[in-house]
Structures are given as structure tokens and as C-alpha cells.
Image (cartoon, rainbow, N blue to C red):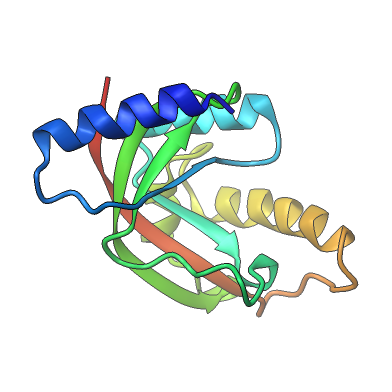
Length: 151
């Protein structure tokens, strides 16, 4: 992770956004360099305006995302590429994620079927590291965000 690029991105963002909070989160999408690069590019291009994560993977010391949270999106090399702000956060069962949310995630052909197939595979991999099993009612943290800054 390139902490210099993260700090620089945040400082540049704050120069033009006097209402920006003091804190932010910095992270990359997915579980591979390729996935992080692909999804970061979708954010930078304004295609990806939502994401989903497995609620079960948060521990009690890790706060859940919230409306107003600013995130610095990283590429697969850990370089900062964009600042986004959460506009909506909902926790809903996997099988109740909407067509609209799947579309806003911007991945694949943007259908709910694609979203379910890709996320079921991803969540199953995450569960392999714990003693939990995937099922269609697992809670999913669905975030919507808006692109606030890119260089």
C-alpha cells in the first residue's frame, strides 16, 4: 500500500473540500490485484457507485461503514485513485439484494444474476477461512457512494 499516495490524495481532496471530515478509510476492492484494478477503474469512470460486503466478516472492533464515511479507493498496487463518500448503507439478506443495487455495482453485465453468482463465489471463499457456511440469507452490507474526487 502506498501511504504517500493515500496521504497526498486526501490532502488534495481536502484543499478543495473544506467540509471534509478529518478521517477516512483506505481500501481496495476484492481479493486480487486484478479485481482491485478493475473495480477501481469502474469507480474512477463513474460506473461503480455501490458495493457489498459480507457482514459476517466484520468483527466487533471494526466499525461498519456509515453514511458520510469517506473512503479512498486503492488500485491493485495500493495506490490511491479516488475519494468516495457513502450516501446509503443497508444490511439486508443476500437474496434480497435488489436489481438496482446489482446494477449500481457496475460489474459484469450489471444484472442481478451476475451479482449473485459473483458474490456467492466471493463470500464462499471468505467463509472458507472461518467456520461459517454461505447461505442465501447471510447479511450483506450494501453501500452506495458518490465519487467526490479523482486525480
